[in-house]
Image 1: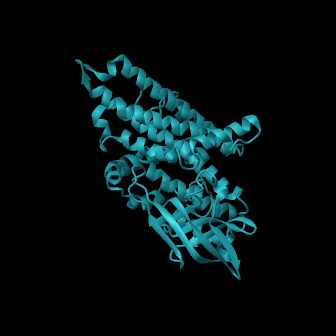
Image 2: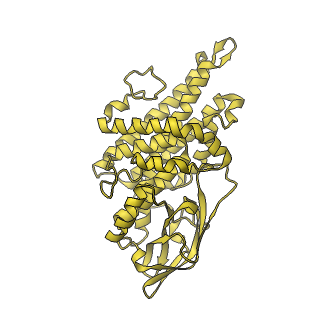
Image 3: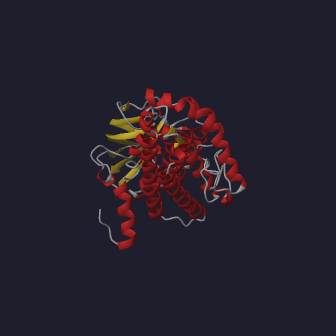
Length: 392
């Protein structure tokens, strides 16, 4: 897939980024690419049209070691941050719904349990989550809060050896298929994290229907009506809003990589169409305007590739700052949305068909540019670093 030949436009790897990857990183990327090409992509148009998450692929993802891959214990693969990013890139090349599942399972469920959980919580949940014997979800967003998680109204009050949880969460990936929900709530001592297990009395989940984006993904509402959660299910290392925000940093990192995969898929289809479509007695790819548009797509994708590669190296070195993740998420998702829109337009009327991937990626990116921090939020995070004062 990688090449130092800039004329191999199918990659696309115009600057030979593959040459900057280790042998292990290349092997991981190529293994996931084969899975995506052979098992995921053929099914994604139908899944998107039917509004169905391909849950049958989850055990295969687990066997490939894609869940919690950045962890080095509890049966996880222990890959580099760059390799994890490449996993997200390839999964999103299939569909944002597939990457969202892995991103939530890894960055928003396994990460907080690993970082903030007790030894007993880690031993119980992390191996099961890595093997996909359990599925998790992350409950932070509320209907009235959106970009202001500090305004959450979900509460937890202490009652003997339990916490009594009341409230609701919305736009929760994996909600109705999850065996455990990492739920954030306001307590007298500040924001705390609780592991709420499926089937706990008073805890219900409901799918959000009639979506025109992320259709191949489970999106849910969670409801808590006097749910009694034992104290041993509280994440003991999580205190304050900084804990869930650190989880979002992990998820946003994966999104920045994933967006590159979505753009690559759109670019490849646009190039193939332009080669084969004959207009005014010539292949479309020979037209000046078409070449300009494809060159612009390639420029944007190449810039985004270098951005996340550098971000991954900083993360592996322990030098990554959350504002750098914000800039990468902002830039790369905007890039992918613009590339998807232009690819859809280049494909003409047929481009609105689910059989063509740009319309699907375009619709998905409308959600991805909003969740895990809107574009405006990430601009303000970067702006705060520039001005050294917040403007939220």
